[in-house]
Image (cartoon, rainbow, N blue to C red; front, side, top):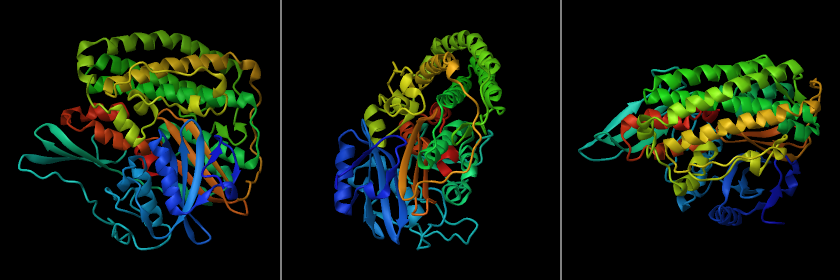
Length: 503
C-alpha cells in the first residue's frame, strides 16, 4: 500500500483505500512531509471497531490522507518539534482521552469529557459546575506582573480569557484560554437528520455562515452523488465573496477605531452594512442564512437582484478606495500599524497559519487558487504585495482582498446567462464506508470539513476546522515583546473566532 493517498478537494474515497500504517511508520511519514514544506489541514481521532484511530489530511501542492491506530498514548509530534500539530494533539487528547506523551503544552481545549468515557487526562471532574483549573504558564521574577482580561469583556464579543505575563508595559508571554461556549457541534452533526446539517453548520460561526454551510453542502453532495448546476455555483461564490467583503471592511473600521481614527471607522462601519444588505438582497438574510442547500441554492438570483448588486458595487468601490487612502496614508496610523505585532514567516510556517494572517507573513496559500471548488478555477487569483507579518501587512492584505473580491463578483455577475432555477432539496443517502475532505477559503482562511461514513451510510465522524484553530496561537506570538497597550490592535488585526474554535 502506498505511503500516502493523494485526494482531490471534495473527492470521495473508500475508507479501505486510505493507507493505514503502524504508528512508527505513520509518525515518520507525517514528520518527513511536514519538514518538506508540508502543512496540516486536519488531524483527528475516531473510533472504529473498538480501536483508536488517528487520521491526517496534509497538504503541499496536493492533498494527501493517511491514518494509523494507537493505544492509550503515542509519542507527541509537538514534543518532537512539529508545532503545526500542537492544537490538533490537544484536541485529540480531550476528545478521545488519548495521551500525546511529552507534549510540552498539554491543556484543555473546550472543557468536556471525552467520548470514550475513560479517565480525563487533565484530572477534571465534570460533575462540578467548574470542572477544573486551567494550568496557566507563569513567568517568575520580582519585576514580573500578571494581567488578566476576560472572559467577560466590555464589548459585545464572545467569551475568551487572555493572561499576560509582563515586565512593566512589555508582554513576555500571552496565553489565550478558550472553550467557554463549547456546544458539541461535531457530535450533533452525527446525530441530526441530513436536512438539518446545513442549518447547524451555518451557525458554527455567525460571521462565516456562508463558508461553513458551503463546506457542509459540498460534503453531502459529494457523498450523496448530487450534482450542482453552474448557476447555483455562481451564486454560492458571490455569497462567499460578499461575506468576505463585509468582514474585511468591518475589520478595517475596527482597526481605525483602535488607533482613534474615528472618521474611517464610521465610514467602514456604514459600508459594511451595505454589503450585509446585499446578502439580504441575495438570500433574504443579512448573513446569508438558508441560502445554501445540498444540490444548490434555496432561491434563484433574478436579473433585478443582479442589477442591484452591480449598481451598489459601482457606487461603493470609489468610496472604499477613498476611505482606504485616508486610513493608509495617515502618518499616525502608519506609526501604530508598522512593526506592531509582527509574526515572521518562519514563525507563521512553524505554526501553520492560514488565511490573511498567513499571507501577511509571506505564506502564499489561498484555497481558491490551490484547491478551487465551485467555479473558482475559472476566476483570477490574487497576490499580496506587503508580507512583513505586522498589523500593517494584515490590514493591507485585507485591503487587497477587498478589491479582489469586488473583481470576482463583477466577473460572476457577467455570467448571468449561466444562472438557473433554485434547488428543492430532496431525500438522499450517503455512500457507505467512505471519506471526503472539503476545503474552502472562508474570509479568515482555510475552512475544512471532513466526513467518515459507516457501512450503513451514516455519518460516523464529522470533523470541523475553522481557520481560527490554526491562528489563535499566532496572535499569542504576535504579542511577545510588544507593549500591552498594543493588544487590542493586534487582536483586531487577527480578529479570530471564539465560537468557530469552541465548536
